[in-house]
Image (cartoon, rainbow, N blue to C red):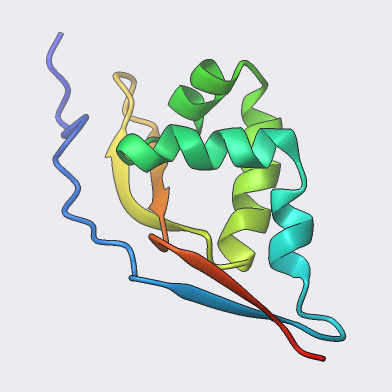
Length: 110
């Protein structure tokens, strides 16, 4: 059965060239976020192409709820971003996530 909603479309997304992070009092959220094996696997999974949480969960081998938790943290840190909305075969909206940056540069503020 055909859906009235477009299920998938090409996402024209270009991540920023670089995300700068300085280690000082309180700005280490990027490193804390990436300290999780699951978060790093999510980053690797969407590095190839943008994906909705359900596809990320399948690729990583975890629950959608766990993926959403890590996506929220990764998004707050600027590592990933919401880039589009797709629709499932049942017409449910699915957020699509992609890398927010190509490079992460960490500077130690001594």
